[in-house]
Length: 617
Ligand code: C2E
Ligand code: CA
Ligand code: CA
Image 1 (cartoon, helix red, strand yellow):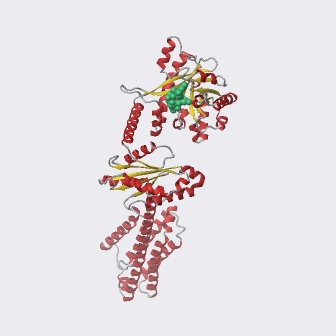
Image 2 (cartoon, helix red, strand yellow):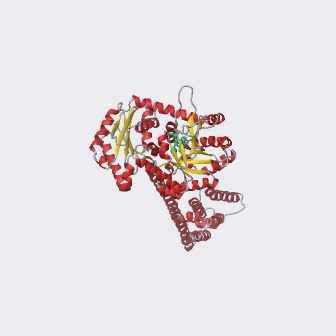
Image 3 (tube, rainbow, N blue to C red):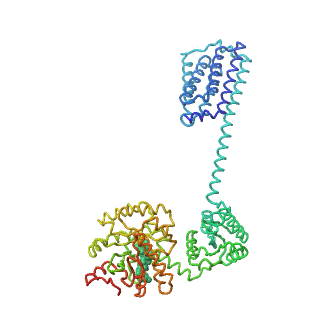
């Protein structure tokens, strides 16, 4: 219905056509006045009335069906006129109008239907006339053959043609207008897709296309990345507008130091890149950037540090993505945040990159082929020194020729590659599968902890997945502790709370690991209801040389006790440290002094051989 209104609402086209029809009607009236052609006059008047009604009632014609009926009536009127006198043009003109209206309002098969009907009707009339089934009023024919009649008919036809021509012109204009608007919209979209709105520079997609096109054409070049540290803080302090202005200023400064052929682009985040075609050594580019950075002293004033690194293509990659990977790796190896300047791509860096890629491949292979397993470190009761539980810690299966990398090496790679959730699920499966063995050996109350990183903890439906794992392995959820670190609070706190609640409703306990190392907030302790807090190892490490560490450690233990939350002190290596720790209110102790992380089979073997060491060695 709305479509119909729309189509009829395309009023200008209809209006022109209908005017033409009115002209035909008026010409009929003129003919009637001169008593020239009474029969076809009736037709003209009827068709003029019909089309005038169509024009006036346009807004009320709300369905396609009604328009079809009106068009059909028009056709019948036209055919009546033709049968009356096939030599009179009036009927044909009405058919022309009807056909034009159907084209203006419909498209495709439907638009062709009316002309097809008209042609079929005309053929039938012709056939009937040629077979003498209907006959022509010869008097009327005679009457038409006067110069006045033909003059008026000719005039009417010219006016009708002008009307139809106008309609076609109008349609064409509209079509061009639409095409123009579409093209403009398309250009705008393209500019969004390839430009950085703030600086007006090309974005990473644009740069990638340019670099890849040049490399595919055999052009050598140099790709430089400029990373700005401190921009986030600047944004937080000075706001969006000023932040944008600084980026614009940097863009202008960089552009001023470049050749015409060089392409400067703004990457995501506080990063720029420059592609310099036909540049075989990165030094020229470095110098250009260095000069610009030195000239622009404002950066340092705002606490923004700029670091640049460049690689030569195709030596370090035949595609933009490969070159960028190198640049990111090199920049991640750069000395700390205080460094400002250009990094040279050294052979040592190349070696490190190769080693990093090999490590990544090795870790991926281990993930795919069961190359990770847990070892368990005992947690002992702080008063009795009996085993209270174990913490599962991941290890990599050793290959023949080398010592496998430890968690300190493979966990950052897993994080960077986005494999942490997958790895976490794998480790959880292992730990849950080992729980029945621990329960058999140490009793049903033994609790086994698994470390879970934020990507897995916040994975949608993590609690449901975990419940399924536990029920498949027929493990009581109360035997499992999930250790999370404070990093998790960098995410939406309501989601974190919900996951904690879901897990605790299941019966699983939640432990806050490495407490005091990150952005600890006492408000988290108050709002989250943790079952356990594990104090960061740094407090124990500093006990002997820093009195404050002891004060903090004992305060945390007291706080935990008041909140009815078990406090575990980690990293106890020496008897002296134990002496300090025993003066606190901690519930459990974990550290090399009591036990090192061991594989399940070694723990079982130790028990079989006469019991595990549960008192200080
Ligand atoms: P964490 O969760 O704080 O685990 C305790 C780490 O301290 C373990 O290192 C353990 O071997 C070590 N440790 C225990 N007692 C002592 C001690 O007395 N002195 C010293 N110097 N160290 C001690 P590990 O096994 O190398 O693990 C390092 C970190 O890697 C873990 O710290 C944890 O954050 C992460 N990690 C290990 N396994 C997993 C895992 O399966 N999933 C996740 N998400 N992270 C894991
Ligand atoms: Ca832990
Ligand atoms: Ca810890």
